[in-house]
Length: 443
Image (cartoon, rainbow, N blue to C red):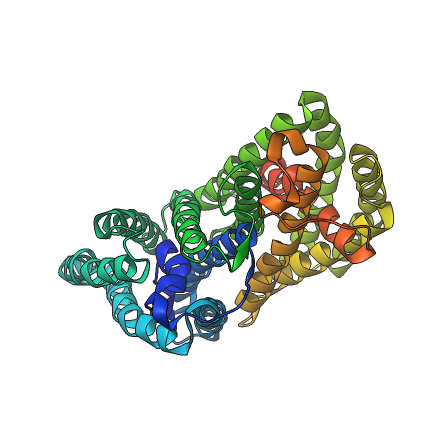
């Protein structure tokens, strides 16, 4: 089962691009270094999210369930995207070279999970020893050689240790059904931004003629941060719904999931204030609070099988909310973002997140695929909004040439920028956790 592949860490997601020796590398330009970093960040974050979703489904429904099978398929899709990244830089032989070491490593993670589920500490300890010994030794040597020493073996081992620590902690919490599982998952996913940054910088330095801009600096940092937080918004929103399904909206697990969403929200809100000031944050919050109430109503309708409640919430999201928020974004960006383009992108986000909520609430086997689609949708807006912010504040972030996707006047690209502002303002993430908790408290 391909969940075995999912265990690869953040470094795997990013480092996979470095698997082969430089001599085997493909030729030709590959685009922006900042975009490369964002892509690796997105895939790394999703790797953890889908891996832990698979563990959750194994615990809740069993390893023979369609829900678990669906989760492993979603992991496979993420795996294929990562493997494609390898070939795009180093060729097909590099993909196979990585896959051999990676498959062994993931087998160790699968063993750890099995030991946790069975309550067999000996199995867990053996798997952990293999991860920290055999796997780290092989993979650190591979990366150091592939990057011609740009990534030192000892440094790689250190990063892998952090990934092993955080993912094992998440697995343990999920299997034990502890309330802090949501926080542990959040920490494991958040850890992935570090290796993605290191790997993309090494690749950029190794192949300077194949990438424009830089994988480092304020603009690239902004893009990577928005990418991670945006995807975590979707993942943690889904975690709230999943906790409600598995444990109930009055459970400590549900409350903890909502708190984890709030932690992500705080990071996003801090981003608002850092760029636009406290008044902008408050202005957003007023519209946002109303909007999040609509999403909470949709979730309640899905959980209660109340189609009328869902229809009403959906109508409010697509009407009241989109009207107000598109006007806000158009004004905030001095017309850089057209209101109609914002509405278009908001529709896509609403579509994908509602589909994920419906799947999770119905305990559907295709729910993981819907979650994956909702996460992947957020890559475009994050990239575009970073470009918009950089263009609006060039003295602070540099220029689009720094590696961030440049925005243009086309409707599609402007729409993508509009969607990205969801991240800057922390849109849905902030609200769902806070409003979901409030709705639960009201009973």
